[in-house]
Image (cartoon, rainbow, N blue to C red):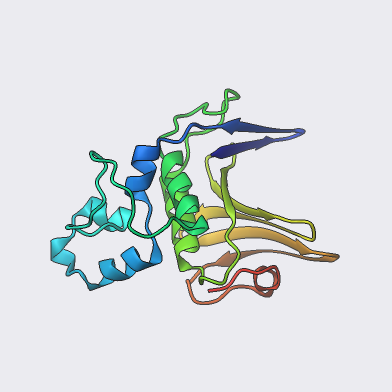
Length: 185
């Protein structure tokens, strides 16, 4: 797992050891999410709704049981965002703010809203505590910062084309720049 802190004239990255037992218990594949949608709300706990795990699921944090379906890149991204919630202030050793839960939640919802054919960005943290999703390739780059209340600030580049904006994410539409580099809802 990689966390990124950005300050003027510096960029710090720190590897954060992943707790595999917790990761395997907290990620959610599309099939599990779909099953979750069919379980009556009263049969779900608040925590299971947040993590996307229905009561009766075969996943357990205490047993460390693995998922029935293979983990996808989106599952791993959501898992990393959940792991970021455990970090405290100064997680980078350079006075970074504690990760903001509302920002991490919005980033998880964005990843979960992506279509199966979409590119999946990698999660990171800004030094101010906001969640960041980024995509870096030979011809593309995108960085999305989750500001809260479903507001996303983004910069995207494909070749010589560039886009940047601040949007309200509704889960149904994406701006042209994000669609052009491979994101799909």
